[in-house]
Length: 231
Image (cartoon, rainbow, N blue to C red):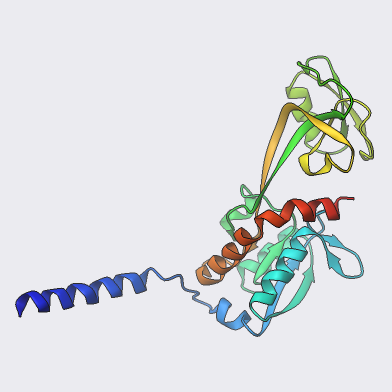
């Protein structure tokens, strides 16, 4: 009898411990959003978020799919990163998107999801050209006013700054998802990597787990979406 009783007590403690580990939302975000309205802050970051008459882009498409799994409508709120993250921290928004990366400086004010896609910035050349073995002294085309110029200089190359990369004529620094559209190939020289994530309200763990589960299920679709929205 004592053994049975000890087993029953142990089982009860196990169930209680498991229940304590279930993700919870102190503010009830997942429960409120399900069948309700998902409030999403958006800031322009092509091709992740493109703001025209209606929001579009890679992350907009992903969020629309996530909302469907919750039978939720979406309220889009446009603003600056700082304003949107501030609203997120105060629970005035449920989610903010805009090409954020997993090392985002907003990590102290928001719950940054695990990354759902990694973008590699590479030096590329036209498909028919031989790639350079060494970038030292090479002229590499980069888009103006971006970190890429500094990354190219770190490799010993000379940045050739242009307003926008519309074609690849020689060594060019660009994101890997643009290679196919620009008929270019990587040279093997990697400049940096960006792991893309979204920002959710801090502490709303059930909502965050649900979002991350959905993003993991869509990882295979992201390259296609990047091709679609970067043309």
